[in-house]
Image 1: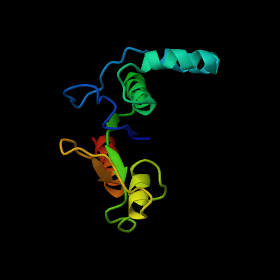
Image 2: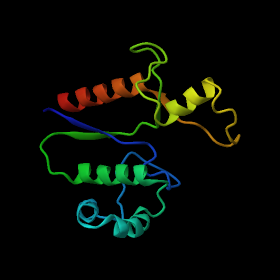
Image 3: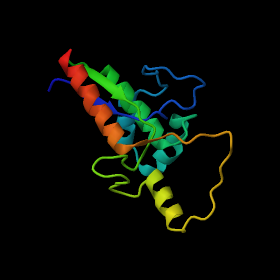
Image 4: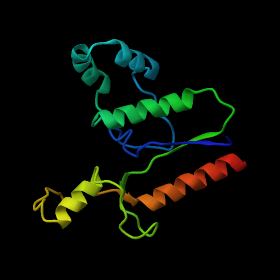
Length: 151
């Protein structure tokens, strides 16, 4: 293996005002979090985990942040980088325009709206929706691995 690319999310640090291209420290030791998850009963985890998650928007971004810290701390002779795409949407061109392999997340909203199942969505003019086509994310990840592994 010449390179390791971890695919995270651009929302892993969304509670911060400004976000830069670096791994941010987290108040929870990822290894301790893993051991707690493995060793404690669900009833106890249900009371502990929300405190561990803190200001994170949800468990998904919390675990992505934990994984980024684990990747950064891993001792390896293999070059490592982290790709942080926002929400991943349908393909732009490859394998064909509009291609999806599931209806999770953003794709589910699009399918629901296009089929008339979802008829009303609350939006604000101050917000933005950050969505990148899946083929762009795949190509970016491959290019990152190639550049990282060649130099």
